[in-house]
Structures are given as structure tokens and as C-alpha cells.
Amino acid sequence: MLHHTVMWKLHDEDKAGNVAQAVRLLQGCAAIVPGIVRFEVAAAQPGLECTYDVVLNSTFDDGAALAAYQAHPDHVAIKPFMKSVVASRQCMDYET
Image (tube, rainbow, N blue to C red; front, side, top):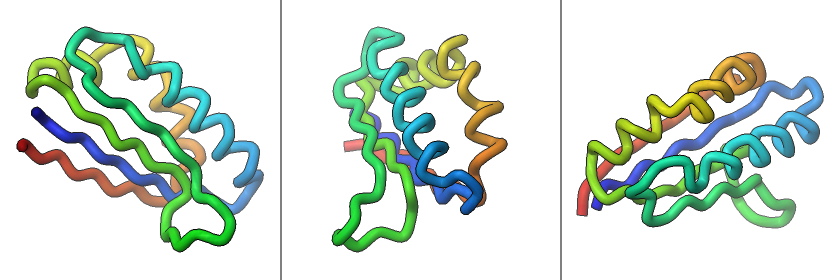
């Protein structure tokens, strides 16, 4: 299994609206290719410790499935929006 975790911190301008849009767009990618085992998108929640605004925790069968996800037109289509609202991004991939 290949785990793919990404966290985004968004710019302050219209943060609430952009967080909601980012979550919606990412959730739309939950089943776009075969080999997605787990796909969880969440926004920071009041009262819980967090340093980023949006997180994606996903698991893929293998590197080929992750590569197919990353190259899929639906995933590629959300990148311009994300780049326009993201202040910083962290990513970690690891195998188990």
C-alpha cells in the first residue's frame, strides 16, 4: 500500500469559502481511478489542534495507482484553484 498525505494552509482572504471549495473539489476525486483504497478529505475543526486548513489522507494499491490519480484530468483540473488559494503545502508518501 502507498499512503499519500497532503496538507494545505490557505491564504487568509476568503479562507472559509476557499476551504469549503477545496474540500469539495478534492472529495470529487475520491474515486476517479482504480486502486484508490482510502480517500479522506477534512478541514480544520474549531476546538481541535491544527496547523493546516485542509488535509488529504489517501491510500493507493501502489505507485501506479497514485500516478494515475495525479495525472487524471479531474485531479489536474483542480490544481489552478489550489495554487491560487494555498499559502503552503506539505506532502508525504510512504509505503506499508
